[in-house]
Length: 91
Ligand SMILES: [Zn+2]
Image 1 (cartoon, rainbow, N blue to C red):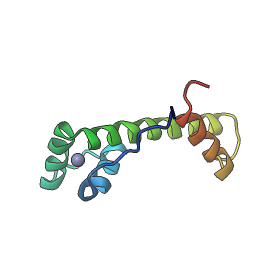
Image 2: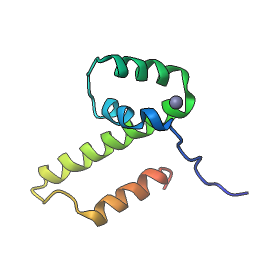
Image 3: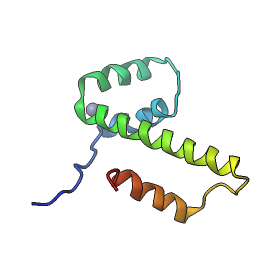
Image 4: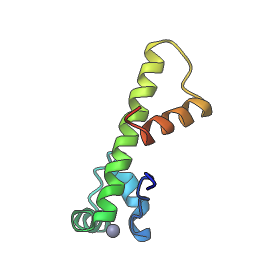
């Protein structure tokens, strides 16, 4: 039995708006209202939003920790380590 994460499959027509919501956009245009309603009903998009919010929070945390330590913001290797740790939270 394989233990792969289910792939996130948000509906293509709302992906970019879901990203904006995850980034904390409080835009309240008609389409954003529609997208928020859609996310409430669509499990694919709800999962994608949750994952994106998790990711955003982790990136912000890693970034501010780096700044606190007086280091340069993380490079690509750190980002890939971060993504690895996000996809293997138990380790
Ligand atoms: Zn959807």
